[in-house]
Length: 416
Image 1 (cartoon, rainbow, N blue to C red):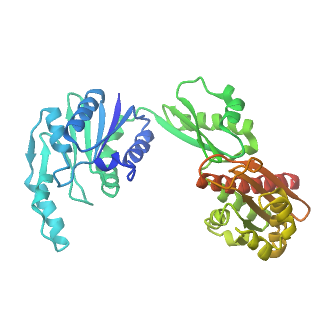
Image 2: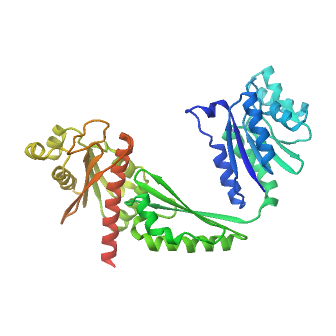
Image 3: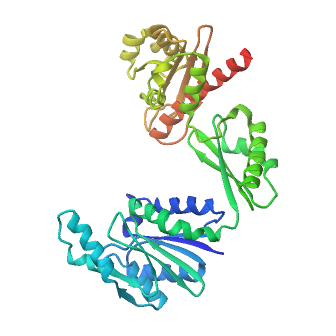
């Protein structure tokens, strides 16, 4: 069975809107063991819409069409699909009454344009919309199932859950389970070199690497005839990857790095303070975004200028003059001094060049020093990050949190 999704709307052809509906549908369909074969995004222009809908109807056995059901002239999904299927649009008085009542309940008079929404494809089953004016439709043509849903997520999702999801249960062929292993401190190619012999040859198991700035994700998928077997195969595959990559994996249950660090700090009874320059407070923001972070986060400062580093962290001006603000020496003193100033067990610091300007041959854009100070030693890492200013800042924060995570894990192992 071939499964497709068509998202309709000229707004989706601009850089300002994303098609989130198809992501929701894909997730739900995957829960049934169904995988989407194709997705199309198309604007409201009639010729383009007809071309895409004709192709999708021909290819798919189960087709979802999202959007283009509004009351205005540029909402053309109903008319174009009727043309493609060779069906009439039939006026449904009860739908019009429902729309009129919805407006009346809000003290409004229904605009005449909303009458268009009361026309339904001949032979379609109506899917009531309890959160809007556009009803959905379930149409079956020559063995194909075509499901038409409104575009707004607050309308689509409840309609799907109440009226579509129960009818799809009969299509369940297998059970699909997913797991995402999040890694830090390794590049995509480094991970690939370590795990390439672990790629499964068994059908129903898939491995996909997705690269993000400062983080590589390993997406594992298992498809089997029942949920127990699917979960068992997935867990076996995940254990093989976890055994191979070890500490480089920081999450297997969806946690963000800052949440993992928070758990480790709390478990160790340790506190941290942060001094940031190039990361501009991003580390502090990420740490404090975790509920309960006051248990372990004591203080954070953004010492962006040289003057601020001298005034607030007592970095000797001579050190900055001799080595530069972006240097191992300054990063080390920032971490040590914020630890002492705050009374925290650990001090974390960043200083670097986020760009896009400011770099030199000796200190290029993207150069970031990250330091972690403890009561006994200070470790400084020299990094060269690629990407935009925002990406460099995020990678700096990711590196800092990962340094802290690895230190806490090492201490945890030593204590056992």
